[in-house]
Length: 337
Ligand SMILES: Cc1ncc(COP(=O)(O)O)c(C=O)c1O
Image (cartoon, rainbow, N blue to C red):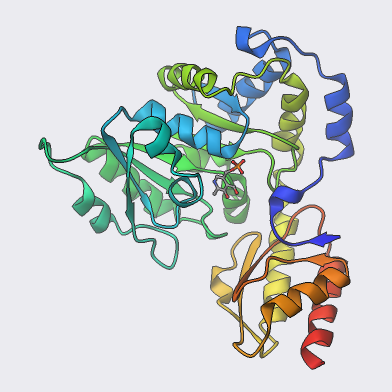
């Protein structure tokens, strides 16, 4: 199948499977797994943090960050579209007793600094304590400008807030700008990254931060049932995600740009081309097109898309330029029928 629904569908590479089969392992809850330790040390160095923690998922890494920065009765500021607000089951509120304060994401994915500033609550018993600003990069495939990150960091610092990055796709953001991940991470007190999206590992994310934060997060991870034992089998693939898959993301970005450009030539699709900056294309279908029929036609032809008025197409390692040409052919045939 040509699966354009998400980059989470990527298959692990042959090198990953081999590394997994040979990984040296121990009990990671005792801190004894050499493959996990190597991945964490490597990531900490690569991102420019004191420590890193291997987690089961991006959701878990974000939740650990929120629970480690905030206490019961605190709040975090985030975008209305933030994954760790909208798509993570309300975990911070349910499990951490932490209140989200969602704010409007502007078209470029940023949250206006004036809105952030206005949302910081005064020290008053009526209010939750505003403790953390959480940003996401990339967000909807868009890259947050580096100057924006610097300004958000300065604001957070001035106002005594910590600042977290949901960097599920921070490697895409770095590659799109031709900079190191550390150049983005330097603006944050903690960063999460998913190894299992465009970077192709089968399972796993990382949380990065200073020693104190990682120690706290390790305790929460255990409580949340995320203490894994011979996790080095997974970490071995994670190491290859960070060493062998980051540069390759540029291909995904080129394929997304190509797909967007070609789709924009069709009257039935509306696309904001400047917002196609990494591996995601959002295309709005003309109202007379039956989205379910289009998705079914695609399925019949071996193509998976998520039906919707606005379809999100995600490019990744298992999508080639020829695959995209096939998708375009099927769309054209369907729309002509
Ligand atoms: C921006 C972002 N953050 C976090 C996550 C959560 O990752 P996971 O699915 O590994 O829990 C996702 C997953 O799609 C995501 O897109």
